Image: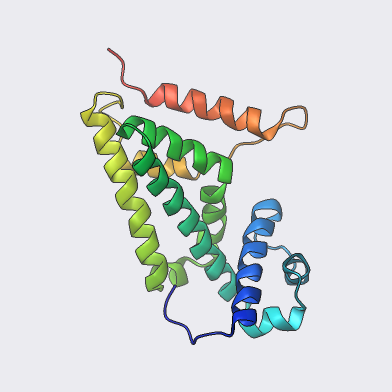
Length: 190
Protein backbone atom coordinates (compact mmCIF):
# COMPACT_ATOMS: atom_id res chain seq x y z
CA UNK A 1 0.00 0.00 0.00
CA UNK A 2 0.98 3.64 0.03
CA UNK A 3 3.88 4.64 2.23
CA UNK A 4 2.84 4.66 5.86
CA UNK A 5 4.83 5.58 8.94
CA UNK A 6 6.98 2.66 10.00
CA UNK A 7 5.17 0.67 12.68
CA UNK A 8 6.73 -1.26 15.53
CA UNK A 9 6.72 -5.00 14.90
CA UNK A 10 3.82 -5.65 17.29
CA UNK A 11 1.77 -2.78 15.82
CA UNK A 12 2.45 -4.05 12.29
CA UNK A 13 1.44 -7.58 13.33
CA UNK A 14 -1.80 -6.24 14.89
CA UNK A 15 -2.57 -4.25 11.75
CA UNK A 16 -1.94 -7.25 9.50
CA UNK A 17 -4.08 -9.48 11.73
CA UNK A 18 -6.90 -6.94 11.55
CA UNK A 19 -6.76 -6.78 7.75
CA UNK A 20 -6.76 -10.57 7.39
CA UNK A 21 -9.58 -10.95 9.93
CA UNK A 22 -11.57 -8.22 8.17
CA UNK A 23 -11.11 -9.86 4.79
CA UNK A 24 -12.12 -13.29 6.12
CA UNK A 25 -15.19 -11.96 7.92
CA UNK A 26 -16.21 -9.77 4.99
CA UNK A 27 -16.15 -12.90 2.84
CA UNK A 28 -18.19 -14.81 5.41
CA UNK A 29 -20.69 -12.15 6.48
CA UNK A 30 -20.59 -9.20 4.09
CA UNK A 31 -19.60 -5.55 4.40
CA UNK A 32 -21.69 -4.85 7.50
CA UNK A 33 -19.83 -7.27 9.80
CA UNK A 34 -19.47 -5.66 13.25
CA UNK A 35 -16.06 -4.12 13.88
CA UNK A 36 -16.02 -5.73 17.33
CA UNK A 37 -16.19 -9.14 15.67
CA UNK A 38 -13.25 -8.24 13.40
CA UNK A 39 -11.19 -7.17 16.43
CA UNK A 40 -12.13 -10.37 18.28
CA UNK A 41 -11.16 -12.54 15.28
CA UNK A 42 -7.84 -10.68 15.00
CA UNK A 43 -7.16 -11.26 18.69
CA UNK A 44 -6.94 -7.55 19.53
CA UNK A 45 -9.08 -5.05 21.38
CA UNK A 46 -11.50 -2.69 19.67
CA UNK A 47 -9.23 0.22 20.68
CA UNK A 48 -6.41 -1.28 18.63
CA UNK A 49 -8.73 -1.57 15.64
CA UNK A 50 -9.74 2.09 15.92
CA UNK A 51 -6.11 3.21 16.36
CA UNK A 52 -5.15 1.51 13.10
CA UNK A 53 -8.45 2.17 11.27
CA UNK A 54 -10.31 5.18 12.66
CA UNK A 55 -13.28 4.55 10.35
CA UNK A 56 -14.87 1.47 8.79
CA UNK A 57 -14.07 2.66 5.27
CA UNK A 58 -10.33 2.76 6.05
CA UNK A 59 -10.50 -0.90 7.07
CA UNK A 60 -12.54 -1.74 3.96
CA UNK A 61 -9.91 -0.04 1.78
CA UNK A 62 -7.16 -2.07 3.47
CA UNK A 63 -9.18 -5.26 3.00
CA UNK A 64 -9.76 -4.29 -0.64
CA UNK A 65 -6.05 -3.95 -1.16
CA UNK A 66 -5.40 -7.32 0.48
CA UNK A 67 -8.13 -8.94 -1.63
CA UNK A 68 -6.76 -7.47 -4.85
CA UNK A 69 -3.25 -8.49 -3.84
CA UNK A 70 -4.47 -12.07 -3.37
CA UNK A 71 -6.09 -11.96 -6.82
CA UNK A 72 -2.83 -10.67 -8.30
CA UNK A 73 -0.82 -13.35 -6.48
CA UNK A 74 -3.21 -16.03 -7.76
CA UNK A 75 -2.87 -14.76 -11.32
CA UNK A 76 0.90 -14.34 -11.16
CA UNK A 77 1.36 -17.87 -9.78
CA UNK A 78 -0.90 -19.32 -12.48
CA UNK A 79 0.95 -17.44 -15.23
CA UNK A 80 4.35 -18.48 -13.93
CA UNK A 81 3.57 -22.14 -13.16
CA UNK A 82 1.16 -23.29 -15.87
CA UNK A 83 2.38 -24.61 -19.24
CA UNK A 84 0.31 -22.20 -21.37
CA UNK A 85 -2.08 -19.27 -21.25
CA UNK A 86 -5.26 -21.40 -21.34
CA UNK A 87 -4.19 -23.42 -18.32
CA UNK A 88 -3.09 -20.24 -16.53
CA UNK A 89 -6.46 -18.61 -17.25
CA UNK A 90 -8.34 -21.72 -16.15
CA UNK A 91 -6.38 -21.92 -12.91
CA UNK A 92 -6.84 -18.22 -12.27
CA UNK A 93 -10.61 -18.32 -12.77
CA UNK A 94 -10.86 -21.42 -10.57
CA UNK A 95 -8.79 -19.65 -7.90
CA UNK A 96 -10.99 -16.55 -8.10
CA UNK A 97 -14.12 -18.64 -7.58
CA UNK A 98 -12.57 -20.58 -4.71
CA UNK A 99 -11.26 -17.45 -2.97
CA UNK A 100 -14.52 -15.52 -3.55
CA UNK A 101 -12.44 -12.36 -3.59
CA UNK A 102 -13.94 -10.97 -6.77
CA UNK A 103 -17.37 -11.26 -5.23
CA UNK A 104 -16.11 -9.37 -2.19
CA UNK A 105 -14.65 -6.63 -4.37
CA UNK A 106 -18.04 -6.34 -6.06
CA UNK A 107 -19.66 -5.84 -2.65
CA UNK A 108 -17.11 -3.27 -1.44
CA UNK A 109 -16.79 -1.31 -4.70
CA UNK A 110 -20.23 0.37 -4.66
CA UNK A 111 -19.70 1.59 -1.10
CA UNK A 112 -16.21 2.97 -1.71
CA UNK A 113 -16.29 3.68 -5.44
CA UNK A 114 -14.67 7.13 -5.31
CA UNK A 115 -12.12 6.19 -2.64
CA UNK A 116 -11.11 3.04 -4.49
CA UNK A 117 -10.75 4.89 -7.79
CA UNK A 118 -8.62 7.59 -6.13
CA UNK A 119 -6.32 5.35 -4.04
CA UNK A 120 -3.02 4.94 -5.92
CA UNK A 121 -2.11 1.67 -4.17
CA UNK A 122 -5.45 0.13 -5.19
CA UNK A 123 -5.03 1.42 -8.73
CA UNK A 124 -1.59 -0.16 -9.00
CA UNK A 125 -2.63 -3.63 -7.83
CA UNK A 126 -5.86 -3.46 -9.87
CA UNK A 127 -3.70 -2.69 -12.93
CA UNK A 128 -1.55 -5.76 -12.20
CA UNK A 129 -4.71 -7.91 -12.20
CA UNK A 130 -6.00 -6.24 -15.38
CA UNK A 131 -2.68 -6.79 -17.16
CA UNK A 132 -2.58 -10.45 -16.12
CA UNK A 133 -6.14 -11.05 -17.31
CA UNK A 134 -5.34 -9.38 -20.63
CA UNK A 135 -2.15 -11.43 -21.06
CA UNK A 136 -3.96 -14.71 -20.27
CA UNK A 137 -6.94 -13.86 -22.49
CA UNK A 138 -4.95 -12.81 -25.55
CA UNK A 139 -2.48 -15.66 -25.02
CA UNK A 140 -5.22 -18.30 -24.77
CA UNK A 141 -6.84 -16.90 -27.92
CA UNK A 142 -3.52 -16.95 -29.78
CA UNK A 143 -3.15 -20.61 -28.76
CA UNK A 144 -6.60 -21.31 -30.20
CA UNK A 145 -7.91 -22.50 -26.83
CA UNK A 146 -10.16 -19.53 -25.95
CA UNK A 147 -13.09 -18.38 -28.08
CA UNK A 148 -12.21 -15.32 -30.19
CA UNK A 149 -15.36 -13.44 -29.15
CA UNK A 150 -14.38 -13.45 -25.46
CA UNK A 151 -12.79 -10.18 -24.36
CA UNK A 152 -10.62 -9.27 -21.42
CA UNK A 153 -13.64 -7.38 -20.08
CA UNK A 154 -15.68 -10.61 -20.24
CA UNK A 155 -13.03 -12.45 -18.22
CA UNK A 156 -12.89 -9.57 -15.74
CA UNK A 157 -16.62 -10.00 -15.16
CA UNK A 158 -16.11 -13.69 -14.45
CA UNK A 159 -13.60 -12.85 -11.71
CA UNK A 160 -16.51 -11.58 -9.62
CA UNK A 161 -18.55 -14.73 -10.13
CA UNK A 162 -20.69 -15.50 -7.09
CA UNK A 163 -21.65 -19.12 -6.58
CA UNK A 164 -24.57 -20.08 -4.41
CA UNK A 165 -23.92 -23.33 -2.59
CA UNK A 166 -27.02 -25.23 -1.46
CA UNK A 167 -26.78 -26.68 2.06
CA UNK A 168 -26.84 -30.17 0.57
CA UNK A 169 -23.65 -29.60 -1.46
CA UNK A 170 -20.06 -28.94 -0.47
CA UNK A 171 -18.53 -25.61 -1.45
CA UNK A 172 -15.66 -27.29 -3.29
CA UNK A 173 -18.04 -29.47 -5.33
CA UNK A 174 -20.26 -26.52 -6.25
CA UNK A 175 -17.30 -24.31 -7.21
CA UNK A 176 -15.69 -27.08 -9.22
CA UNK A 177 -18.90 -27.82 -11.16
CA UNK A 178 -19.66 -24.17 -11.94
CA UNK A 179 -16.09 -23.41 -13.01
CA UNK A 180 -15.97 -26.54 -15.18
CA UNK A 181 -19.16 -25.43 -16.94
CA UNK A 182 -17.83 -21.88 -17.32
CA UNK A 183 -14.53 -23.03 -18.78
CA UNK A 184 -16.31 -25.36 -21.19
CA UNK A 185 -18.31 -22.38 -22.42
CA UNK A 186 -15.15 -20.32 -22.89
CA UNK A 187 -13.22 -22.97 -24.78
CA UNK A 188 -12.82 -22.53 -28.53
CA UNK A 189 -14.49 -25.18 -30.67
CA UNK A 190 -13.18 -26.65 -33.90
